[in-house]
Image (tube, rainbow, N blue to C red; front, side):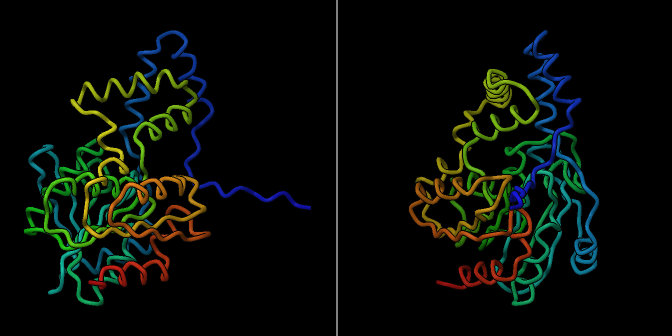
Length: 287
């Protein structure tokens, strides 16, 4: 009987990098933490898939300034006369990654906007974090005089939920494959690069001091506790980048959320699934 192969989606960390960081950690834990913090803050960039290249010809593109973070972000706009929708991609993603959702909404009348987060795609910057995601969302919201719907993927979902702690015009929120606890994100990253959890604690303290924040206040399940905006939480049971338990916990703490679980779509293919897109449209349409 053949052993079932585990479906791996995450990016493998090179063995040489793990070994190097481990050796540095033995000599200087602080130095190892600072190197890890740099890697943690630097998104990877990938070649644009053909389908995303095609969608570029069907939308308007403009580089816009986000004064709060002193960066320029690339904005993608599918103009229409209907309700306004903002899409936010995840870590190491790009604005065109949600093209199937964008074009499906545009076809039925929605005015859709997406963007490359700072240090992603065609936007400026070298390092970034969720604070910059939130600042970008806020800047776009002001530019378009408020969005009716916010749709996020992965870290983009967490940024949307954090942004929605403040009063807004948003009528519906959709999260896809959202992360939850910042501590878990930090711990998983540190373990993935071969370091120990003491280094994760050091990195947490470093970021909290640098940005004057409490990372717990960025946990998705924490920020939704008082939110009343109807929210659809979509997560695949076979998501090996971000476990489905994140969706369970966000749903548990959200006063007005609906949870949909899919099977076999993973962390990224879910963005192109026709059934999921129909469920999103149905949720947005429902009053």
